[in-house]
Length: 465
Ligand SMILES: *[C@@H]1O[C@H](CO)[C@@H](O)[C@H](O)[C@H]1NC(C)=O
Ligand SMILES: *[C@@H]1O[C@H](CO)[C@@H](O)[C@H](O)[C@H]1NC(C)=O
Ligand SMILES: *[C@@H]1O[C@H](CO)[C@@H](O)[C@H](O)[C@H]1NC(C)=O
Ligand SMILES: *[C@@H]1O[C@H](CO)[C@@H](O)[C@H](O)[C@H]1NC(C)=O
Ligand SMILES: *[C@@H]1O[C@H](CO)[C@@H](O)[C@H](O)[C@H]1NC(C)=O
Ligand SMILES: *[C@@H]1O[C@H](CO)[C@@H](O)[C@H](O)[C@H]1NC(C)=O
Ligand SMILES: *[C@@H]1O[C@H](CO)[C@@H](O)[C@H](O)[C@H]1NC(C)=O
Ligand SMILES: *[C@@H]1O[C@H](CO)[C@@H](O)[C@H](O)[C@H]1NC(C)=O
Ligand SMILES: *[C@@H]1O[C@H](CO)[C@@H](O)[C@H](O)[C@H]1NC(C)=O
Image (tube, rainbow, N blue to C red; front, side):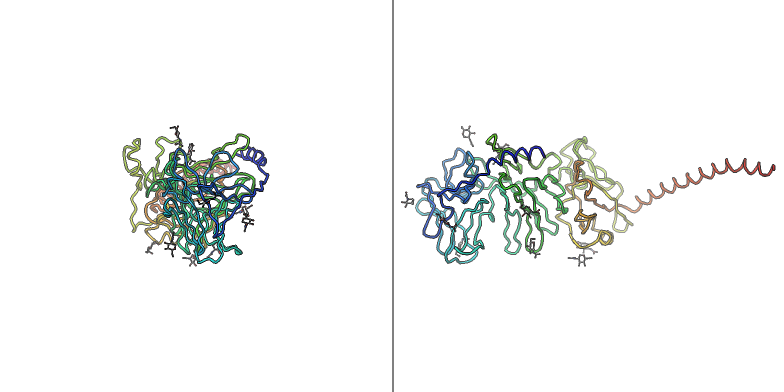
């Protein structure tokens, strides 16, 4: 990967020239963008363009943003996704109050956007980041921005997630088909519960889960970590939950897309030498990434046959472990557990953390207190540190069945791998202790015998003298 990125780097440096064009990057309330006379906005450095286009083989017209300097039309954002204009009558206007209106034939509104407050001198501007922003002429704050309403593409600087203060969700949704940018089935965004994680959905069904953030990466997708070209930021607090990437090597060109036909999140890099986009990584990456493939307490292990195994201390519920149609049944405890039983915890390593829908997070609680709290609440099934950095901190607790667990591939992250402690009957421990006692007893007897063998002849010799 290192070699690959440096090759990309050297080839993309060739793009490090800035084209200053006469084309405007903005319009104000007296101006408009019209399809019939082909007007566009071009961002200051010429990287992005806003205008009308027809996708694939369709003749429908859409207002969108694409890479201006690259061959082909790689669209990154679409305004009227589900309401195409069927001829070239489309016009985009900035209203004096600060709203944006896209009208088609007979001035029927195909799309509109409202600013957060009434504007005085609104200006609509396409930025070099690919963000289309509406702001007051002499102010920096955005009244509206396209980055708040993603289509299928994640660009650098774009927050994927929630602004909890206003209930705004920024979620990627795939195009229905290459000819139709209307929202498809596949989407990718944060599930906001106490312990947030990214979930890819097909319709309303979970399809792939990132696992929760562990301070360095999401436990189920270590792939999404910083490269020499870009880095990642994860924020989760009372006002915001988001994930974002930013360019370190500003001349490199990269985007991530939700792909409906492949059912994938794909990161593309532009390779200037070849003049084409190249897929850098994709998710889900293998069978074990399929959401909850192995059912409750199942542990999906690539390379095992069948891939669906059980978490230590559990056994398959179905006898037909070879039958993929039975995998969803998952596993059950080898020894049943009731609330009245004395319990302890088994430490497991290298697992993708279970689904966090029914979990609690406390970033300041110590692991010891975490264990104590979990132990004293019979519905708590497991706990772990929530942050693996600097020897571990924070507390996550899981309530109810543990689902969507997999064995992560052995990799360099193993050093600070997130351990999870799963509730087990105390007798399991007692059995282990009994075995330990046996070993100690045998050792003591052995030592005694050896001493005896050495000592007896010695004593006999002493008596003789
Ligand atoms: C808007 O575009 C014009 C070019 O048409 C340019 O002269 C002006 O500086 C731009 N305004 C801003 C705020 O960038
Ligand atoms: C641009 O389009 C608008 C609206 O369709 C029209 O009124 C105007 O005359 C056109 N201008 C040019 C230069 O074609
Ligand atoms: C457009 O149509 C051609 C010919 O029917 C087909 O080969 C091609 O795959 C289509 N492209 C898209 C993007 O649908
Ligand atoms: C924008 O605001 C106007 C007036 O407040 C309202 O009628 C309209 O529905 C709003 N449009 C959107 C897209 O929110
Ligand atoms: C949430 O995190 C963001 C980014 O670090 C920060 O700007 C903001 O002040 C935080 N909000 C709260 C309520 O902690
Ligand atoms: C990521 O890179 C950007 C741009 O170089 C920088 O401003 C930011 O602080 C970096 N963020 C992290 C988390 O390293
Ligand atoms: C989806 O993936 C296929 C195969 O990799 C590719 O041909 C197609 O262009 C991708 N679609 C999008 C929207 O990126
Ligand atoms: C988190 O744990 C700390 C330490 O036990 C405690 O003081 C704090 O109240 C807890 N926070 C929440 C939100 O429960
Ligand atoms: C156990 O934890 C759950 C989830 O936080 C909570 O709803 C329940 O009241 C707790 N039970 C006890 C006995 O503390």
